[in-house]
Image: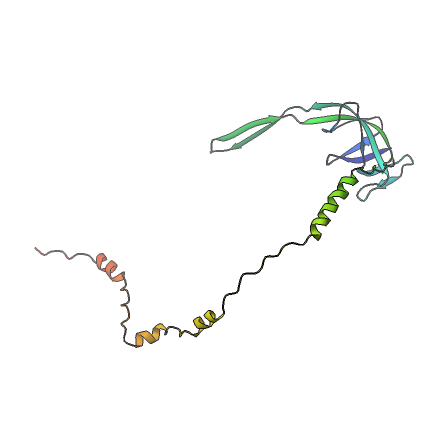
Length: 194
């Protein structure tokens, strides 16, 4: 009998009484751990049970044997012709576990109700009382008379610029193109005759 279990985002094939090296798990050596994400089970009868995504009612229980660190991994980065190279290394932490049982999940005990309901009730009463109290409303400021807006609207608009130019104003002279100056500078000078 074996199963495929997801532990810390990785999938492992587990069998009863086998040791397995997995990513670091919280807990001291000798403590029990249980894994609920069982993806596949080959049971005692030889039947294959596939999960979608997990098999319901199946759990793998294990004991943490020890914690340790893997061999050092060297991480070397280089960019050629740039004078850049970095050499680092690290040792990954792991946990060694022993599989105790592959079987049905135990029913979880219902969580006990908290006894801190009385302070919450008092807080709720205070907020309800605060909502019931009338809030003093400020009187709105006096509105400005609308007559000023009408006076502004009745002023005549300024005449358009075209009409002003027709009335006798001189238009500004157009800027001369600077291309003539550039072409004049490029002409070759005349040679003096001797």
